[in-house]
Length: 384
Ligand SMILES: *[C@@H]1O[C@H](CO)[C@@H](O)[C@H](O)[C@H]1NC(C)=O
Ligand SMILES: *[C@@H]1O[C@H](CO)[C@@H](O)[C@H](O)[C@H]1NC(C)=O
Image (cartoon, rainbow, N blue to C red; front, top):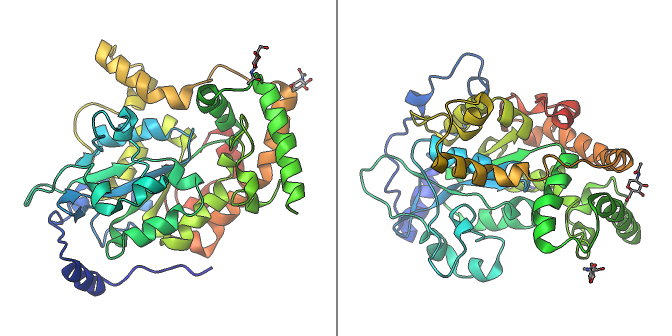
């Protein structure tokens, strides 16, 4: 498994000249200035910030997405996206084409995962973001499409599409207890696609049974990382990939095959919820920017029960939280939760093992650091 190393900046400059594309927005990064980090924050302990190359990039006259919040789906990525675009200086949302693209494309562009969009090329992709302005402050476009993590082959596509600009990319992954993730999946995606009359407990019971059968028919076990890139990744409706979406290790390993660990940031849902300010501060440093001054993050506000939010603010909060909190009140029956937890244990262990491998050594992480400090218990309990 070769890790393709990005080209040197001299090569990049030559390629840029050859392609006739400029970095209109590079300007001096104010990352250093913004790094007045609170003592002990993860940003100050993450010694391998990918700061050599700014995360701002101009392609075809538009600010190109360089911040890829790739998932995992149902792990709080929508809330985190909302916080990044409202809290981090210079971040930009996408602009869906009115009448042609659904409103949520403001967050997720589905460029790499949808063949018909990918075929239209980078000029089409970046046309969904604002135009570059010479001399303006650095701006960073965000694409938060969760399929980029859980569809095999996405990292390779991104790698190919960003030739000459790969070092500008920052890839953010948020993970949570995979058992809780299934609850959220059932409550949101499952409800939307139809549960086929299966209750939550039946759904999990049948999913585990079918996954076991599928694994066996492909010479695999349910403990295998290979399940994710196998035909068992997606079971028949209404089961789909409700379970395999929580196999984080092979999904993250795929990004590490194509990009240096220093361009990846790992966030935990529990850490994000409990230490929102710190996580956003660290991610701002990872992107190479500072926090916007002003209102605290949506999670921080919600957690603190701060000043009663107005109607607009409440709506925005509700929208941002809908995904990660759906089914928050529902519970599995004891037997089903135990079965699911047992299924995920080896996969959580696999993630922890990956974080200890040399390939992951310089991965950025927050609110804990280094990434290898994450423990299985911390992830499962949501305490890290
Ligand atoms: C769910 O149950 C209803 C009523 O029993 C039935 O009409 C419907 O076809 C079922 N749907 C599925 C997807 O099985
Ligand atoms: C939990 O749900 C499963 C699947 O529907 C069922 O077989 C089992 O009897 C339930 N157990 C309890 C304790 O309710």
